[in-house]
Amino acid sequence: MDTGMDAKSDKVLSYKVLDVKGKEVGSIDLNPEVFGARIRPHLVQETVRWQLARRRSGTHQALTRTMKSGGAKKPYKQKGTGRARAGSSISPLWVGGASIHGPLPRDYDYRLPKRTRRQALISVLSEKVAKQSLLVLEELKISSGKTRDMAQVLEKLSIAGKKIVVIAEALDAKTVKATQNLPGITVLPVAGLNVYDLMRHPILVGSRAAISAVEKRVITE
Image (cartoon, rainbow, N blue to C red; front, side, top):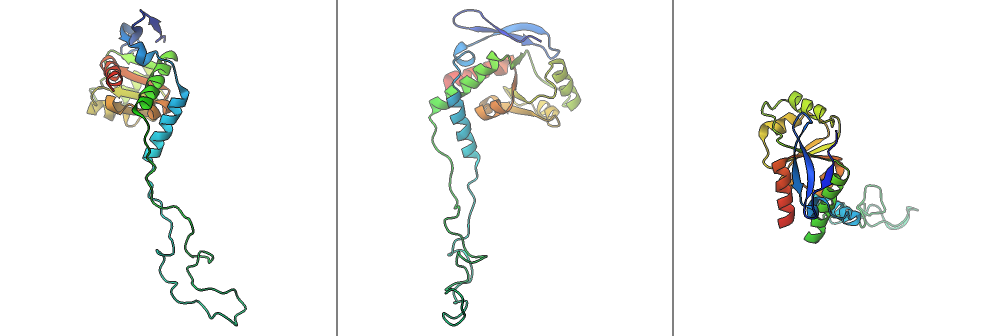
């Protein structure tokens, strides 16, 4: 199935639109500033690192001496035992003792310029188009809410079994339900489209309206 793009003019890219049976039913004009820009791998890598850092809970906690109970009494007398001198049973040198320089709660988030995040998203979207990994559908709506019906759509689009991001202009409850039991599929609203999920899923699927909404979001950011 050919889902390629053709340069219509200097200002737009003409990209094929399919129906749920995989047949071409028209075309959509894509903004080359969003879907045909230069790919910047270093910005994509920086953005993925930033997203993963933000997801870290940072709740790790080692027990320091102030957090351990006990240890106030000297475990045995200073002299005459033939053992090393010890002042506390919670010393970090002892088995079961406190930790030295252990991890403490912290926030891993850091500031990444909005321009960098925007350019990274544009790079990933442009790569999807360049590799013909973007499928634009006239409409994607599973009114029955059945997994079987969604699986049939993927079969007809020749993308069954692949890792897919489905972008929706508005999350339809039944369409989401139809994808929940299919492995490798992530459904995202337009506002939730992000670089990390696009990198994890080789295929991006969206309706004509959803793709137009993505374009509008990127341009106005």
